[in-house]
Image (cartoon, rainbow, N blue to C red; front, side):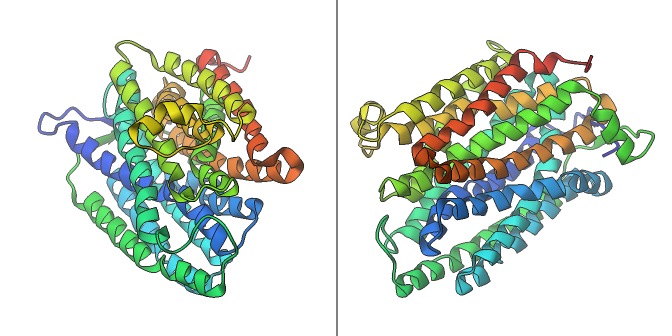
Length: 433
């Protein structure tokens, strides 16, 4: 992109109008993104996939960002933010309809292509809505605005797996045993109507994005071409390191949210499809705390530092814990009528709390002081979402390599260590020398 994004002062418009639009976009992103955690173990059982094969369902969704990141930024530059949101939703809705022939033919290849195309749509939508939220108000409170819209994203992550389990999974399949072809057909048929409804809902959001009035955004024209701006942007270490931090953050977020169901399936938990909701609930708590504390009591940098430390500690708890121990669940869930779940499984969910403030904190730190390069930098940061394709693959490969379903989570440690480095030093770097 060849422009910066700044909100034009306009007394006729409140910040809550664009925030309402942005919040609705983050909600639909959450519905699509966090459905992966519920549908992956479902397809793993229906199509009889290995853990490594199942990881491709998630990876194909995120790998689209690598292809669509910069083109999405160029598209937003041409059509504007509001139209970009509408186009992103339309692509996602059309892609959701591909699940119908995929389910009918029970072909993993079509599922993967549908996931890829939904990933393209969400990349366009992310590229439009994220920099808008960051730049719609003061830079020092950007993390709070991202937290507010992020709450809707994570709230979708809480309710969607539960709805999926209630509408699709309940009465169709249990968590163990070999399935007959008739059972597989029943599972496949149960996907058709939900995805018709999902596509219809997203089309409505596309219309909302197109029709809702927004305050004008001022585009500061820049000289040169897009390639020149990318090269210039890459000369800023805090941005480049921020892209890496975003990629590693998304990798660990996807692992904690989208592989928890597969892990639950492997250790014999019947309600595997709702496990993503636990991770998202922990993220909601983290977002709420962030809104309350930033920037009045805590800086964005401090929040990111604490998140990195919490991630490292929690990964050790996942890997070193015992599946025969229920200390955490007896403290947090059972007294309130919740199920009894093994400690390592609950610790995977608690990673959601550690991850909550990473996205809201990294974005404004990475975009700080970039001026007219903000649009191009945002496209590069969006490309970092491709890290979500790496996380599940590493878990799958770790499982195959002999680390086991539980030990494979050790692959998350380098990511949290780098994020801690970015919080302490990387975001301050303004020169490669």
